[in-house]
Length: 246
Image (cartoon, rainbow, N blue to C red; front, top):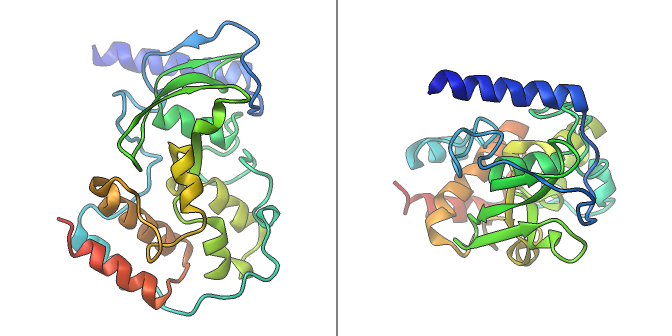
């Protein structure tokens, strides 16, 4: 059985290399979608793969990593714009998934959704099911002008927050990498993502309380990886949250 799964995964990879993938748009599928019953990047539906954030395995490890983050005041938003982090969902990055022929949004949809179907190859996700980590709801995703935004890709560490806590001083390539790093991205409920905005842990946590420990650990991990700092209020909020975690 394991050998057959490995063969199937190799076949999918060969198809992806041979066909190439287009840039995502929000238009309805023009051709009959191809069905995949499991996530291409996982062998078990709903199970996170190696692209998920390398967050600490437990609260003790997360607190130790939090202690390595510099504590500073928030820098001004002067000069910030989404364009400072490059073209949205660019594949021209050096983080995991870069230069694979698919744009980052579709990469994350493929990773986080189950029961996915594709249109026009193995990049553009036409439909799927999201077990939303932020709300605990099950959301049916259908690609289209009026439906795509029901599932959005959230930057766990918001780009505006990163800008105020170190990213202003980075190269354009490093900012582009952060904006497309799968470790900093999650497919989530669209309206909840909008409510989050650019909030840090001191001002926003997921409504789904069972995910909060994981969420804070992910933020700490990405800030440590990119050497972003935290404010005192943010640090204290993270510490309080981790004190409730196992």
